[in-house]
Length: 249
Length: 260
Image 1: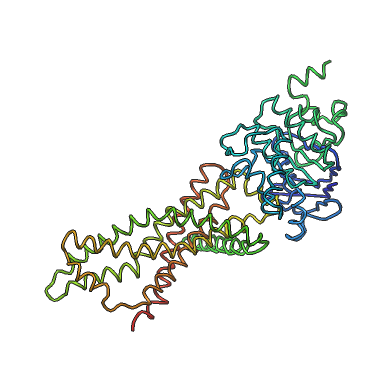
Image 2: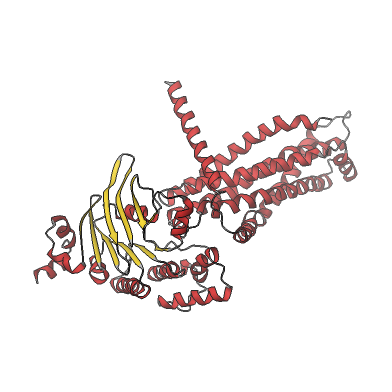
């Protein structure tokens, strides 16, 4: 479980996050949704420690993280896996080397053990025979899947995904969503997904947190979204024609 | 008004210097295993050292050739013996040309490469990916580059010295401005071995400056492709200025040791 307590953040006097309080539960796909520029990615970066919040704290199963020492942060981070928006694969390494990278640096496993784990993770995300390819030689969807394989290779307790569907076609998006959901259920991990894709929210969101102008305005399950009386959430959810049609029915 | 502008630029310089010192301090904390660094240093040494051999050899050979021809035409006098030309070529090569000119070329090739590589990694979130894995990205990425540069640049300077002096010898033979025997006699005349030590001290300092400044410029890149290009340019400019300033400082401090 991850608890975000009273987190605030500003950049050059511009307040981005206002006293955020939210709990991300274990074994669930926790979504953070909202329009562009509402502070979703900043909140995610505060949670994983890439940005230091000015106020408040983040606790991973009771362990304080955001303002902890670098050593404690390193210890907690080694239990994290993260899928970045663009994949963030290392350009100079092959797919296999990318996925093996965390094992090389963080573990003392033999080459054979590492290779077995890498092949297992690549198979798990539906990628075979791409081990020797460079990131520039594979598609956007494949990059995301390699990113997921790299994120889960160390068997993390926490999985973070920043806009996992951005730039992908609807079919590939659904595949990535289902993969994230399956991995969360299978390994019983705490997954936090930042997205503004409503298909994604309805597909895999166990618990949804809606952000607007740096504040969490609504929290609930994906089934409850349509019944919300929060105007900003309704404006966001039913902005698209497809969702308006769904609402109409 | 000028005072205010000077104050602002001085404050900006001090702020950058402070940030640079903190950045360098960060590479020594939360280090990974020794084995990780050995592999990385070997990889980086190939990139910064082996891959720079060609350009260093070309530049040094012409540097020696030009120095020989220019010195020969400027020392046409019955009072000056021919071997003195080779002596001048040797001293200029060891004291200034081999370490400093090679460092400028090195900053252009390796410095821009380091800044471009780190800048691209920064804007594509590869640096963040390392941090999230619990790896100190500054130490993991930058320390091996600095170590490789400090180890390999002196090797390049030694190579540049040999090639430059040999380039001068070949030019002397081809053009006939000085005989081969006189050249060999000249490069052995009044030789002070501290000149080599001096060149190597400069090489270590310049190697560190190029790698550290370029890494710093690359590491703090924000934005997109345009800013990566700007970081590379800034890395080369700042490295060249730092090399020249350090060259002056080292000359001021160590030159007295050259005099017998």
